[in-house]
Amino acid sequence: MIEVNGLTRYYGDHPAVQDVSFSIADNEIVGFLGLNGAGKSTTLKVLAGLILPSAGTVHIAGVDALEAPDSLRERIGFLPEEPPLYREMTVAEFLSFCGQLKGMSGARVRSRLPEVYKICDIGHVSKRVISELSHGYRKRVGIAQAIIHDPDLVILDEPISGLDPVQIVEMRRVITGLKSSCTVLVSSHILSEISQTCDRILVLNNGRLVAEGTEEELAARQVGGGRVALELRGELAAVRAALDAFEGVSKVQADAAPDRLVRASASLDGDNREALVAHLVSAGVGVREIRDAEAELEQIFLDLTQRADATTQQQALQQGDT
Amino acid sequence: MRGMLLIARRELMAYVNSIWGYVVVVGVLVLNGLFFNAFAVTSRPRVSSDVLEDFFYYSSGFITVGGILLSMRLLAEERQTGTMNLLDSSPLSDAQIVGGKFLSAFLFLSGMTLMTLYMPALIFVNGKVSLGHIAAGYTGLLLAGAAAVAIGTFGSSLVRSQLVAIVIGAFFLVFSALSWMLGRVVDPPMDDLVPYLSIYDAHFIQTFAKGRINTEDVIYYLSVTFVFLLLSTRVLSSRRWK
Image (tube, rainbow over all chains, first blue to last red; front, side, top):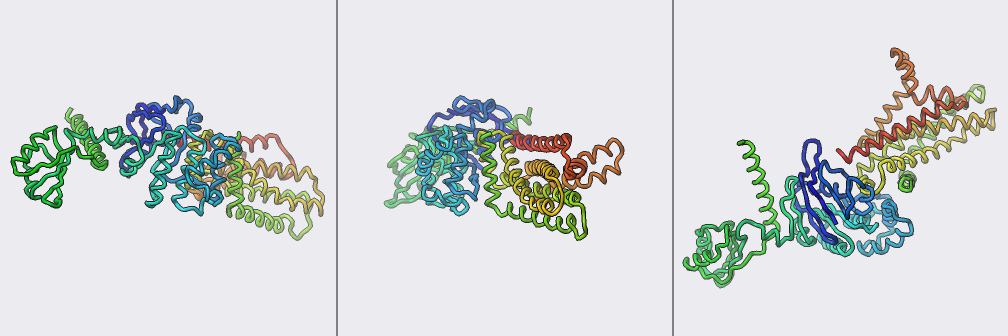
């Protein structure tokens, strides 16, 4: 569906995106995760045909973004962070205009509108002027304009920014509902949002793609044996001391529970669980359970970006030495 | 073509639904009427064709200023409000976007220009002027208006601020208005070229306002319009590379 190879985009001398490559299959919801300035919006703008890449290629459904940009834009729906709305128009007028702008006939727009109203749940405000709508409804109208022409790819840049919790739940429902008819690209710096709506995650850091995969795959890629969860019996201080004393354990967290139970988690440098269990038992700590911890997306993201930053610094130092 | 007409229709509706369009129309019509009464008709007896010539003289200024005021928002406002993203992500060429914007402002300006017809009609009823003189004058007004809208569109394509867009458009109009003076203080061959570039003096006041249509002047106005629309398209296209 989407093939991106060596995508690079400069703003002046500053590289906003560098050598980014990925591919996305049909009917996938893929999340772009990254801090502000990581290159998410730039990548999405290139995919939406708003700006041209400095280098690299973008193919969407076999169409080259550089060779046939108009044909490409017919297949794409784009919602920027701030929905592009003509506020003096009613919702129905605006969506009709957008549909025709995308090359649809008036009759086709009229037949498509009820479906779009249903997907975005905006039928009851279709006669209202957009300037009178709340921020949440404006976002929904923004999505409606992006899908009015039944595109192959929908690109949503920070779709939940500025929404209240109820609106976020509604927006999540709308986004996941799009999956049945098209591929969806969502960018966000809100980790929980990406975690809950996306099938796959692309992590950008300083304009480079540092990791991609499902949340589980990214967790599995963490250093060494990964993070383990432990259920132990003993005094909290003694348990903590025993864990700290074991070499090859870091980032220890331990909390007391009833009946002298302690629930702990720790990162292992290698697959040395047997040695850890033997060490804890010899220290007088009862080991009731040891298992893989479900890594939080926040932790995965921090690890990935910190590792990418460390690699970049190391390369810079090596270049300095030579 | 369809995309261009679609944008033109939406923009026309935006003029009709916004206060700004009415402010410009009322401002231009009131000032044009006042100048017509005070400086063209006057209280002393005058030859009808001179009155009509003076009417076209003042109208050319008001219509071109109106053209700049109407066109200042065309592209700057889209950038300011973020709706440019909607047009950019649509399968429309930059020429279609600029063409649609220009067409809407020009049609609105043309409607405003035709609203001044009551003044030549008064001269026609109460004096002795030919319909050809009136038709030639209005042809010139519409051509000068088109050039002004194209200049305003160019100014609007350069910046986000509508105020700065006006300043850019006003610069070209002030240059045109003062070019006959500039022509006196510069050396040859610029002394011929500078006044020639004015959208008022050489190409309107000496010909259209007097009831004459010169092919050279028609080509001049069409060229100015084309060049500034082409420049606007180029500026719009450049943002995809910046």
